[in-house]
Image 1 (tube, rainbow, N blue to C red):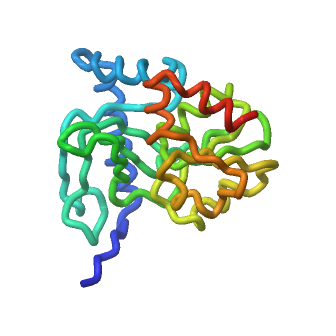
Image 2: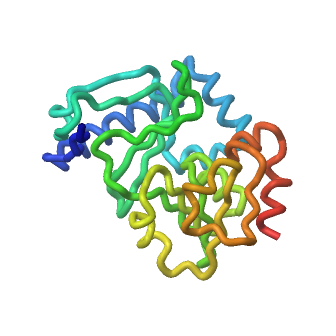
Image 3: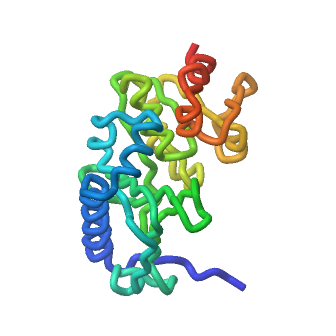
Length: 219
């Protein structure tokens, strides 16, 4: 049975709804009674500056909206799962919304909101050196730890073709792979790439092992 293709029939409406959901989530993260999520982010190594600049938010509960109310067809509902919202902005326009799921048996999974454009998260650095990772939160943390000198690109669930524009012009390309990332990062992994032992850079940070892990990659 073929899976119907998700198509945005009204990009303006999708953008309006996605922006509203993202703004609401950002307000929720920094509002009262969400200190536990704030603490989790701090304990994961994120600075206040990084959190603010990334416009991260907190989707407080699983929510489903009719797809047509978001200008999308090919799917019954738009799912906004409980978790940390990560907006992907390109040319000052929201293109994609990714949510790091927390709770309901989906901890650590990433969900791309239906109707999002195939645009990767790109964090521009001060040099043409580029690092590529799989997960969006890892990209934010890595960009911070590299003092914003490297451009960092997150592949997310996108196909390699969607990464071509983001990787054009890179002076050097360094894949930062974890144990289970070899398939997702296969187009960029070289024989010298040594995967880090762990499930994510965020998890390494929470274990106090991030600095040591990055030192083995960025020698």
